[in-house]
Every structure is written in structure tokens, then in C-alpha cells.
Image 1 (tube, helix red, strand yellow):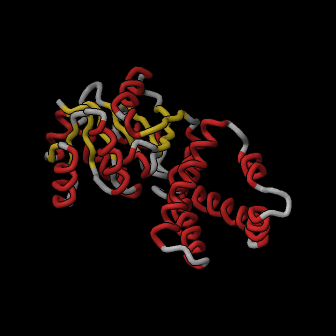
Image 2 (cartoon, rainbow, N blue to C red; image 1 turned 135 degrees about the horizontal axis):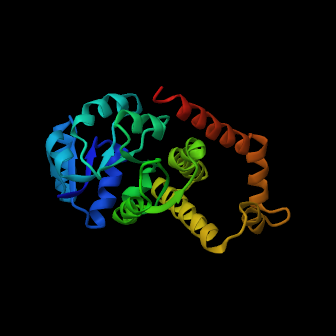
Image 3 (tube, rainbow, N blue to C red; image 1 turned 60 degrees about the vertical axis):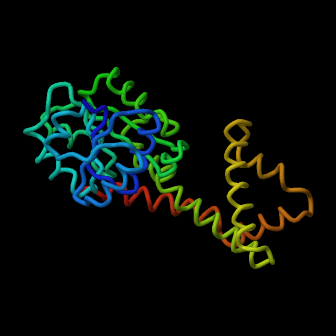
Length: 261
């Protein structure tokens, strides 16, 4: 018997598989890309199986297919659903009710993870369907504890949460790259510029979490009167940095709502 059966092993599914494997879960994988599945099995100790065997032997079934494929996959799985089985969806734009209806009132957990799950530093928001017992959700969270932090949220807010935490790693990576590029432009070797940007972002996030200060105050703490930091902040404001980031989050939220329709 497997703790988790993953259907689809893309970037996000693969990150969750790696996290679950670190936590010692017994994992089954199924994907049409056999090369991808075999590589992930070699890395994690998971087992590649048929869709039928995965459904027969998995307590939690994680739907890792693209949003527009979820409903077709649910139709395919419905005749194989077993009593007590729990389905976990990470499809943007596909609400719990649609999956519950397609699977004839099965227990459903909707999660929105992010790629840092692969290194145990993820931010995963989730909500429960009407037929999912709280104890089943708690067991799933224990199985996935090595992925990072979890936060339960109302489903109508999960797309916005994903726009920040799920899409955010791409935005943060762009900022990291831009910082390094700026350092290179100022004469730093590329490797050192990237190292400094990486550690700075890691340390700043840790400081925010552990120190509990508002980001505005953290910014003020670095800005000496007439100093170099406030000069840089002024340039970011001149170029619309904060407005651009806010618009990026809002655009991602809007797109999340469109997916799966």
C-alpha cells in the first residue's frame, strides 16, 4: 500500500515527490513520460506503476496534471475510486466542487504549492472539500511536512495566495538575477554577484520571519539619511518597482481564475 500516488510528475509534482520522499512516504508515480518517471524514481525511491495499480494501492491520489486536463482525468478515475480514498488537486482555476462532482463526492483537498517544496522551504496553501474529514487532511499534512509551511485558506482566496506564493518564486528569481546583473555591471565577478544576491534574499526572508518586523520597517532599518541604500530605493520607486510587482501578482491571480475553464 502506498501513502501517496502521484499522477503527473512535472516541475511542481516532482518537487512534492522529492519532499514526500524526504519524509519517508511510500510513493507511487504515473506519468505518460516514462523517462521522467524513471528518473524521479531513481532520485527518490518511488515506484513507477500503472494508473490502475496506483488507484488500487494509494490512500492519497495527487492530481498533478495540467488544469485543463483535470476533469478528463477525473472522469477516467471515477470508476476506480475506492472508499476512504482522498484526492489532492493542485490545479489552478479548478475548484473543489467540480472535482467532487466528477468523482461522485469523493474526499478532496486542494493545495497550491510552490517549487521551493523541493528543498523543504515551500509555502503551500490549502482548503478542504465538503467530504474531506479533518483527520484525513491532518494525515496528508504529516506525510508532506518535509515540503515546508502549510496554511489553510478559504477557497475564494486560494488563487490570490497562489499568485503570491506559487508564482512568486519566478518573480524572486528575476529579482535575484537582476541584482546579480547590477553587481556585474558594477564590476563584480558573476559568480560572486549571484552568491551575494542569493544569500541576501535568503537572509532577508529569514529575518522577516524570525524578527517579525513589517517589511517597510526592515527597509527603513537599512536606509541611512543621504546614504547609498536610499539612493537605490529612490531609483526603484522612480522606475515603478512596487507598482510593477503588484501588477504582476494581480495578473497572475486573474490568470489563475481563467485556468481550468
